Amino acid sequence: MARPARNSETEAVRGISRTFFITSKTAPNKAVLRSERMALLIIDVLRSYVAAGKFVLHDFVVMPDHIHLLFTLDQLMSVEKAMQLVKGGFSYRAKKELGYAGEVWQKGFSEVRILDRKSFLSHRDYIEQNPVKAGLVDSPEKFPFSSAYFKQQKHAGAKAQSS
Image 1 (cartoon, one colour):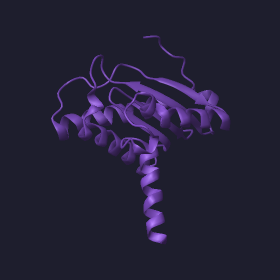
Image 2 (cartoon, rainbow, N blue to C red; image 1 turned 180 degrees about the horizontal axis):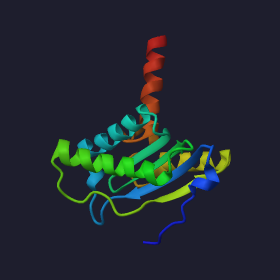
Image 3 (cartoon, rainbow, N blue to C red; image 1 turned 30 degrees about the horizontal axis):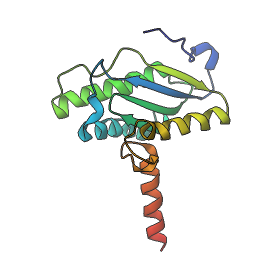
């Protein structure tokens, strides 16, 4: 696996927030995130770090063998540290709470620095369409392990309350 150039050099980004599109794959030949329990656990891990103010999560999708994240980090958080939290936090909880004993993640991850609105929207669309392109659902909001699904559920709940 090629080692990507990191876009979070501390000296270059001090004092600014940065947004990244991240892809992280599970261990080779393991669809670790295929089960509902595992998929919901990674979503809970993401939520816990958002609630703790570690990063702002714009969009995500949990596929059977990888995740895509679109998140913004403040000047104090490197992309490496954020992914260490996500991957390490999930691995720890999967072992502790679900008794999973195997290797979860491939080493490393890939990231793209989002520099403008066009790139942000393009990556957001990629995340939403990923389960559709994989043939798992016929529309993004039907995939239960994605931000598109949760946004649709929230919208439907708000609509029901206003009626």
